[in-house]
Image 1: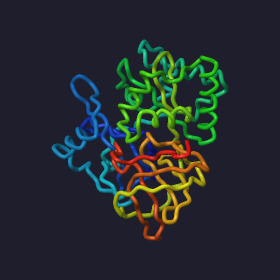
Image 2: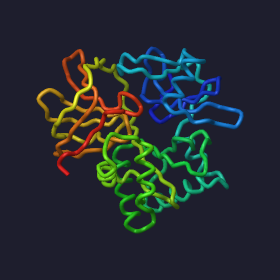
Image 3: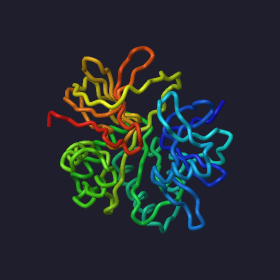
Image 4: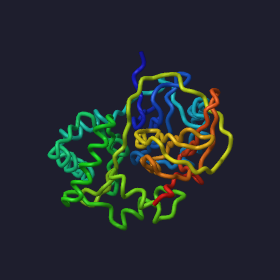
Length: 312
């Protein structure tokens, strides 16, 4: 039986390539992922999408992959080619017992102590991003992963309480601007901040931004294959948003054609609540069963794709 690879895990190959896992389970014996870091003489170098694709095309084309399940060009690594599996939960526990002089790790410690004092169990929490492989720099964010949906929403409420008590800080204008420019999303700055401020899945600890990510381990089942029908823009009413923070995020909607919206980009995770009217720009997809859905995040940057609440 194969090891379970989850979204937000990192996998490493013998060539010194580190990929972020983007989906649970395997396709054709491969882990679906995206190249994020390459090992250089100076240490880990983070890659953007264009650089990652160019490097693989030039040197490692075996890791380029078209996923029939996702109907998308991704990266994929055969399980036999994985030399190290970086797992967020194990990494967090290792960092918590480490006496560190690193400022990012010290802020992670401070954040975890705050959460523990508020009654949070750290057993279902991990750390991903640069901290997962020790690639952080002094300006790095902290990316936490929560593996239980109920615990995740409880943590959001606790963050709101800690902000109100001034033990954590809401993002200031500088942090919002940095987040907005990093995301390069297709919303105005004002719309972006309005949606984000009500999510309570990010805040500042000692001036450093941290984010919460939800990864729910689901029973593996054969996934429907979807065929893209092209870009589209629809308006629909959200009728179920309990999976809005999942990866991928999922919104059930009332619309004459589309039954659900699936989102693979963190920018629009938790974007809408039940009962809200939304506008969705993305790829319309049809399953062999006839089900129609909208996909947001067909590329990592999701250029031209968005979810926006219209009933503000």
